[in-house]
Length: 113
Image 1 (cartoon, one colour):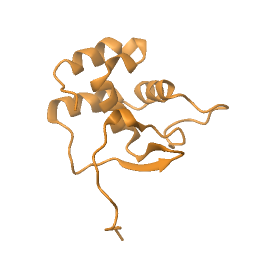
Image 2: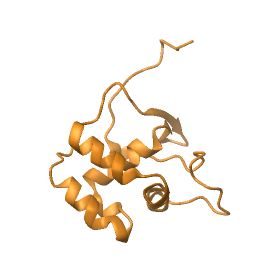
Image 3: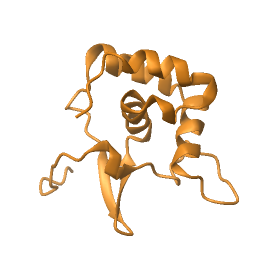
């Protein structure tokens, strides 16, 4: 049953952080940093293709990120790949070196909001 009391708001992607405990991220001895999480998703979960799709078709508002406030930060609970793709479209320098030029190319036609 859907919770109809959940609040919907818009946040700048710069204030939302990826979930290091996401099942897509393999366990590590130490928590991964935000850049390491982005690299992991790019290298193993086809974030470049997702970013390409978002760049071509836009972000569908029917697929919102689910965000929780945790330790004073906004952390994505659902949508790690989408958040990583959007972060990379706006800031392609966050991509791993081997993907940097690919994300720079995609980002040339994206406006930051």
